[in-house]
Amino acid sequence: MKLTVLGNNGPYPKAGGACSGYLVESSNTKILLDCGNGILARLQKICNIYDIDAIILSHLHSDHISDIMVLKYAIGINKVRKNLDLSIPLYTATDDQNIINKLNYNEAFKIEPIEDESKIRIKNLDIEFKRMKHPVEAYGIKINDGNKSFVYSGDTSYHDELIEFVKDADFFLCEAGILEKDKTEDSPHLSPKEAGDVAEKANVKRLVLTHFWPEYRLDKIMNEAKETYDGILELSEEMKTYYI
Ligand SMILES: [Zn+2]
Ligand SMILES: [Zn+2]
Image (tube, rainbow, N blue to C red):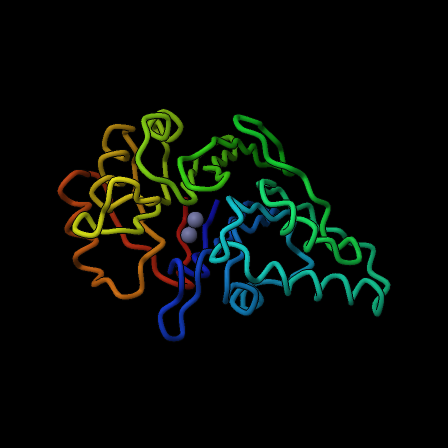
């Protein structure tokens, strides 16, 4: 598998940046995880929109879904103009029906609700979902190609089930949205220190942090995670491809 980080800010981008969006590829399979602001322009630097086999939205916060609202035009209008027979499968949390209704445009998407602990298969990839701890319905996503396992946390605060879900993963893409100094009792994100702690306890082989508050210094994020995690540790870089 390979993973390209299309955007890594949250919940708003730095100048010239983009929010959550990750392209997972394996042989001829392409899956887009989240589609936040700035993602559609970057995705097209790598592949054609119509080559995407499925889109998965971890949750319905705007920094993870903004560009899905314009992607529906690209598909929906071209279905009419180019006579395309295309509805991209869209697996998504469905707690906000208002947003789900807005996704319906010329059947650009085939909407499939995600359920906790459900499993699906997209071509050669097995995918598993786990409910995360966030103010809205949010899921972690595990992808296995029969050889390696990849987990994306989506957005979440610390919880023990996350450790179980990530257990022995080859590659863990984990949000680290808030530094320890800014944490409150009900912060909806993991600190880099907590992300490292989850990865250490879960025996993760490689940890890549993401979802960076645009005003943070990246060395502070790295230093916090190093306190708790001993394995291979990196900060995600935009438009970089990682081999899993
Ligand atoms: Zn977010
Ligand atoms: Zn969120």
